[in-house]
Amino acid sequence: MDIHQYKIMLVDDNHDLSEMIAGILRQSGYENIVTAGSVAEALDVFQRELPDMAVLDVMLPDGDGFRLFQKLREKSRISILFLSAKDEDRDRLFGLGLGADDYITKPFLPPELVLRISVILKRAYQFGKEAGTENASVLSLGECQVLFDYGTVRRGEKETPLTAKELALLKKLNENRGKIVTFDALCSAAWGDSYYGYENTLMVHIRHLREKIEEDPSHPRWLLTARGLGYRLAADKGERR
Image: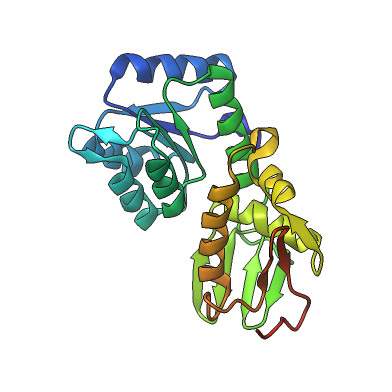
């Protein structure tokens, strides 16, 4: 499926800005755009339209985008990008720490917004397969299994969804299993050529990954730190520290 066919939900109380962004996306080939101006309206639109991705403003008239993010995550593992006038590092790190795929501040460059949306959609759905497809690509980490084709972590009967960024990072680490993958290489895998400045954000994603794949995230056995260099995915039997 071509990424331009996926449905994108724009949530912003500034109607003119929302229409401008919708116009930019349509000019770039994205025809399936729905909009909302508040938390309540966004939840209603989501329930009715079932979008594949959401672009959320942080400051909304009846709440904030962070809370909306959490409500959407309770229903789906939809890809989410924050687009906000709040450009403080703590807000960006908080949004990414929740599990968002990206965070862009206003004002923004239209080509950059389109590029980041395209990158997120490609990484989120290039692993997908039609329901019922067998022989999914699986990474075994002890009692935990990562199902790359479905973007989930399975432990026993429990399945936990991965974000697009987490999936991209795990894929890169798995491609180089047993070897150190540098900070730059991981950031490039997750954010593409515009990865500069995401080193601190990378640590947030690594922490969330450990919470999903490690039995004891504080004492990781599989996703290991190579101090000053990057990270490494341990070999088949893991490593006890």
